[in-house]
Image (cartoon, rainbow, N blue to C red; front, side):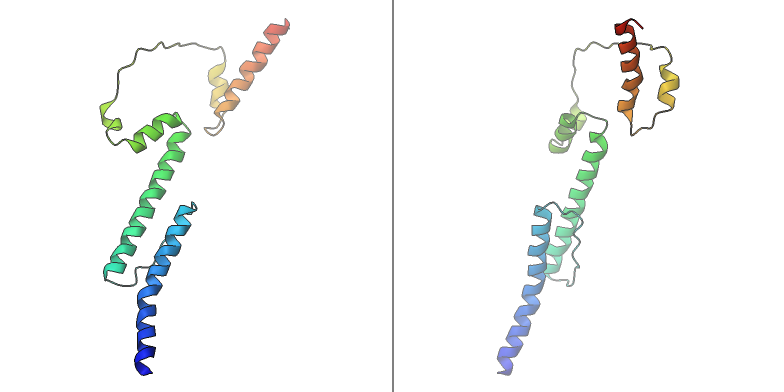
Length: 136
């Protein structure tokens, strides 16, 4: 009987960290990147737990990069840079046309805008265009 009790305790000691890893992977699969597992041992399970934590940290960094650059760079470019390691270094040559325009008073308008509100820069231009179109 004592042997059976010790076997159960030993099995639980092995299975508990594996269950935590399974729970953590399910959480990450569901999009929770705030998962951090305690590395409770120095054996293979502890090493696997450390690798899991490193993987989640890398996924968090990747998401932060996507969110940060996604606000300022075309999402297709961000995806290409994140999914193709060679894309960042090789670059490409493209033929393009660039149009520069100086809009009267735009500097003073843009100085009042916050970085989080670039769409607001178009509002004064839209109002000005509407006035000109209606003959006002």
